[in-house]
Length: 233
Image 1: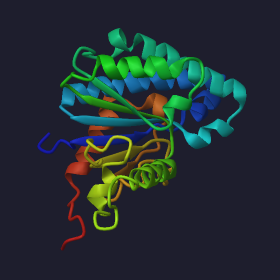
Image 2: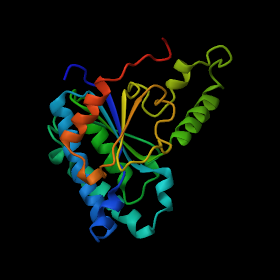
Image 3: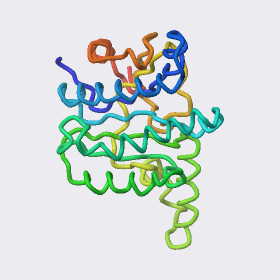
Image 4: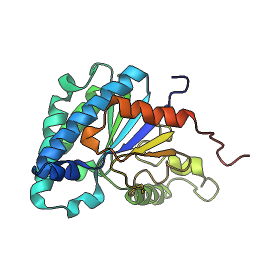
């Protein structure tokens, strides 16, 4: 591939529909979705992608049935606990988590903090998991932090895009070049609202559990044929 997107973001949609199509419980769809995520992480490592952000659980997903939420949280717990050995090239992948993950149940915050700390010096793929994440919440949290800091800094003359960027959940990560959404839905669902300003959007009807390396490469090939102007002619 001549042009590799530096940062790919993915809205992993369709786990429930995948299970429904097979007359299976939705929980099985989510388990298959985890396997697909593992495949795509490995594929990004193989293809030389530097940053990958996966939309794993939104702030709106709490509206789902309690049983389904518990299954998802248990999957997070199992996956994050085992990530040291199950992540492809786990000794190189750096893991970040964005969102209000400190509010998660089942002891997840301590597990998440552990994997963040353990991989902080890794220099391979930068993997970001958006858990209990909402784009509007991120912007609100940034504004709240700025107001708090305004007691010690003069914000009157420094408010700019670059200034606000510093208060986002992961300010050091570059904006996505490519957004992939599975299951054929044409919306960004409150995902990385600030960062998506100039992302190229690729939508596939493939449900997330069926999405694999060949589908990822198809999305990347499509990206290569885009002319990115960033507002210029």
